[in-house]
Length: 261
Image (cartoon, rainbow, N blue to C red; front, side, top):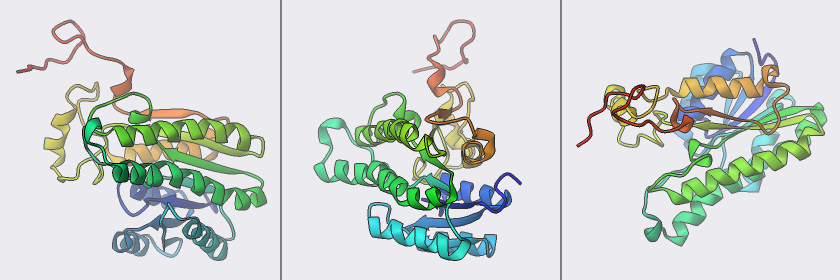
């Protein structure tokens, strides 16, 4: 098992990508603190996975809440080895119509939450002499897109913060890396809960020709969190079905056969 006797805090761990990470980490032998504001979902997942998984209500925008999550990890399991910053929010709006409240809340959860979460685990990781922090950014932290400029700004911020933190904390054997998911079927990205077969149609312009399962993202997170990623510091992994690989010239050889209009 790749994470035997390691202890991880996973924010946004009640469902979606975070939930998939919780399940995979538990399978790989880790003790896990599920940190989330979604109490019912988090409690249910913890009960499903057994005594090595504990739910702790976590508001990632509040330093005291992070301190409580770290204290729970130390009291229950003796310390913190891994942090997965996965909590996030997403809204859709034209850039001209963004409200100040919408922008501030998005940056507060997605970026500020990642920063103070990282700060919260530095002391216990220093005690351990090492650690791994995996920040969930997005393909929207690598390229642009329409209809969610605030989210894009926050995810570019997560990417940049990861680079800076990796340089500074890497000197203390605390590795910091980022995952950039694209086209994932989660409650955040698929709020209408479309069936997978129907949702896949949204990604016919991807090389993969389908949506991504959160479990596929969790495998990338596991790589960075475990010793498999021991030489990765400030690295970024796009798991996106080819979204960021480039563009197709439709109607020419090598492109999917898609009829537009």
